[in-house]
Image (cartoon, rainbow, N blue to C red; front, side):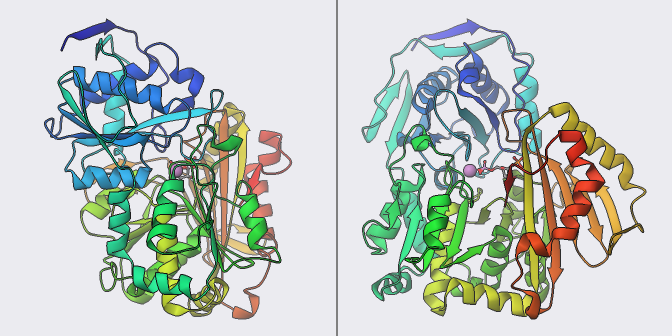
Length: 543
Ligand code: VG1
Ligand code: CO
C-alpha cells in the first residue's frame, strides 16, 4: 500500500452547523475541499483507532464520489476496517445503529438531510462519535480548528471499488465490509415494537401511505411495512431513492410533502399517513383529515409509551429542544419524570441518553427519537405511532384530541424566513438580545413578559456550556416566542420564529392554529421588526 501525501491549503468556511458541514455540491467539488475535511477528522479523532468506521449516506448526488475519496483517505490514515452500506446507502438512524452494534470508532455520514440534492443543490458530511451520535461541540470545534491549519492530506493511489456488491473488498490494506443497509435496522425495530399487533391492524383493513419522497427511507419502509408487517404493496410511495430526490425537496412538512397532505385531507383519505426526509431521521405523521404537530407527537409518544414493548415501564426522562412546544413537559410532570430543555440539534441529546437520564426526546422540526440509537429516527416514530394505533384501535384524531383533553393543548407554529440577508438577520437577533434585559414585566397586548434571554445551556452531564442558542421570551401564562437563526441553511440566513400558547379549555381546542396565535404572531413580528429588517412581508414557510 503506497500512501500519497498531498499538499493542500485551508478553506475558511468549513465550520459545521447544526448538524455537520453543509454546502452546495459545487463547493464540495472544489479540489481538496472534501479531502481536507475528512483528513481533519482523522487528525483529531483518535478514540478506538482499531475499531471499524461506519460510512454511508442518503444517496444524493455526489454520495458515491465522496465515499470513494473517503475510503482512500481512511486507508491512508491507518483505518483498518470500514463498514459500508450497500451502494453507499445508510439512513442516518441506521448508520447510528451500526456504529453502536459494531462498537465502531465512529461514522462518517454523508447527507444534507432535507435540503434538495443534485449537481446544483446541497451536500453534507458529518462525523458521529463512537456512541453513534452527532459529534458534540467540542469535537466539531476541534475538527473545524484543524481545517484552518491543514497543509497536507493522505490518500492512496488506488482505483474506485464496486460499492454495490455485498461482501468484503480491500482498499490498500483496509478491509471494506459492504453490508445490507436495511436488515440490522429492521431487526432493531422488530425488538422495540409489537409487530404481531401491527400486522393484525393491517389485516383488519387499516390503510396507510408512507411517502419516502425518493429519499433514503424507501428501502427501509418497504422492507418493514410491506414485507415484515404485511401492509399492502403500494403502501410505500416514491420509494426509490434518487440522486436528486426526483427534483423535490425531501422535507416532510405540509409544504414539501403536499401530495401526501392533500391525499390525507382528501375524500379518499386512508387512516394514516407519514413521510420522512432525505436521510431518514425526520418524520411527519398525519391521520385522516388531521395533522399531528411534531411537538404533540413527542408528548403523545411519551404518554403512550407503555403500549410499545421496548418502552413499557422503561422511560427514565424526556428531553425536547428549546423551541419545541412545552406539551412534553406536561406529560413528564404527570408521569413524574424529569424533563430537559436542550439547544436545537440532536447532538445535545447524546449526553443525556448516554447517562440514562432520558429515554425519549424530540424537536419541533419533525424529529423524534429514543435511546435505541443516537439520532432522531423517522421510521421509528412511524412504527411507534402504528404500535399505538394498533393497541388503541382509535383514529389519530381521537387519540390526539383525548390527549389535549387530559393535558391541554399547546397551540404551536413556526415561521421561517429563508435566504434573508445575513447581516440584517444577525442585527435583528443582536437587537433582541440587547432588548431582552428590559422586557420582563412589560405588558405586550394581553400578554405580560415573564422572562427574556438568549438561551444558554449547561449540560447536566459534562457541565459544558453552549451560549447564544436563541432568544426566548416567556409570558406569564406560559406562552412563548422564540427567535433563532438556522444552522443548516446554505444560502444567506434563515430566521426561525417559534410561537406557542397553552389552552387548557377543551371548548377551545378546535381553533385554526394561526388564528389562535394571531396576537402573539403580531407581537413577535413587531418586537423584532421583521418586516423592516428583512424586507419580507410574510414568512417563506409556515408550519
Ligand atoms: C434544523 C432544525 C433542527 C434539526 C436540524 C437538523 O436546524 O431546526 O431541529 O436538528 O435542522 O436536522 P436549523 O439550525 O436549520 O434550525 V436534519 O433532519 O439534519 O436531519
Ligand atoms: Co434529516
